[in-house]
Length: 241
Image 1: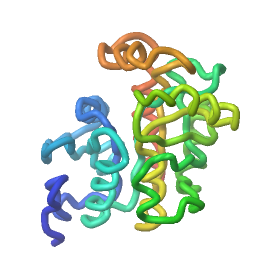
Image 2: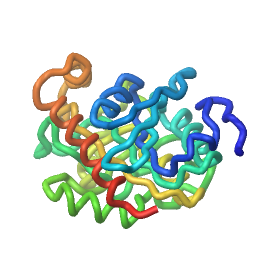
Image 3: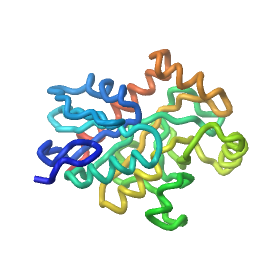
């Protein structure tokens, strides 16, 4: 048995190969509400985890907190205990005016504008999802927005608006903070990876408004969150080990 990992506080005795990664620990319970036989596992720092089943498939759900560093810790330690497939179920801000609130953005590739992934690989190394998982996403959610996203390290820099406007001109669909490192480590550690992002902020709109809608459980943003969770569960049920 692989020993308990320092941060996620899990070991290989959980006997699971598939995982859903969320940022917010509160979202772990939202995923669990759609699963059967849910068991709480651990809660250390930002890493809250449960284990449950969906249509007979055993699935781990774990939070990673905010940003690439903590997401990388989760990825590395999950790899150590035998996880082979991960789907990020997160939120993002749109970078195109045509993308409405609650729409799902599924990354076909990600601009690596985080600081950590370049410590693993050169800047020209691509951050891409697993092709099989991406195909299943297209099959089960063809109405989603499929395209390039951007991962970054912060919201409040003085230059943030200008940077987002530039990437928007290049056709980038939306931005989050974790997808790039999840994709890079997925490739390096031979883990299948996908990222499904619920749009909580309209392009060039106020960040706090969208996030507050998500936290308070309001309207179409919450519907998008539920749709992203449901899609991830469906994909993991159909995806072969």
